[in-house]
Image 1 (cartoon, rainbow over the protein chains, first blue to last red):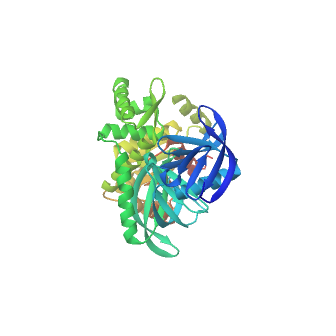
Image 2 (tube, chains in turn yellow, purple):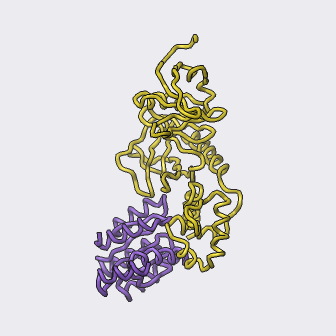
Image 3 (spheres, rainbow over the protein chains, first blue to last red):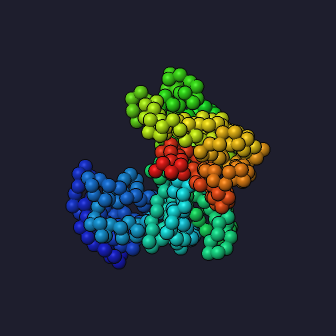
Length: 271
Length: 136
């Protein structure tokens, strides 16, 4: 190995159970036992918990999961996040700016990067590495906000986290902002359901989001249980909801939640 | 649902808090009515624009108004001003979509007591309504 070693430590890799290996990190590669992974070939990255252990999941021609002592795990995660294969743009970001429409206090603008991978977008700074998977992205809009006492055009990116709509703001030179907005919009469009929903399906989706049970949905929409079940099947088939109980009770998937948010926005535009 | 309603009626006596729902879409009014009913609250009336809201407010003197912001004829901010000029202590909660923070700020300055975000989530609506009514 001619590359400069940055770190060597014991680790465990998950391959039908945990196996002890040596982990070596260099400027260009990650070695897990005899496996060499070029950092620029890592497609995406995620923190996951397996067997109550905090692990790093690497996406590269499949998935590779490993764990190391927590003190080092966060450092390696940050290093990999900065070096994986992505389109990276220097930006200022504020994340999360709002959660469920409520402004988050004590969050500050950070200088860092917006990094776009095959599986998601990242807000990266030395302090923060926030990953938002593409399926959880809801919308991207331009808006004017007061930043450092000045009125500035920012991008407002919304996504779904724990069934709530979360927004983050991005600030960068205007020409980059426009290009980034279009880029993120294309990513969002690529995740949207192909089929158009009927007005009743949109209303049912909104009622499920609001937490109403089947009986209430039937009474508000004015349909029978059998009819509602047909609508439910359609929502489930489109990946917008999943069944959580027999005598179908549904909960929305992130895709469904972000669609409800869009429905509300379009209704507010028309009045 | 009916059992909860009756229990709360016993708890509050015969005078249950009355709410006026203001929204230009019938669907959203139905949804709010259902949520408020499940929390044991009485719906005094429903209006589909600000002008109707002011009239119904004068007639029913509700304990609380849930007020949509963007509506035809008279918007929620104008209706809030009129209601406040009739009854300065009126309790009005604004209903807003994500991204309308500036309008909410304006409404709070004009005396709105709180706000709920669309799309509605029942527990959050109930919590805000009860908070403004002083029930929690």
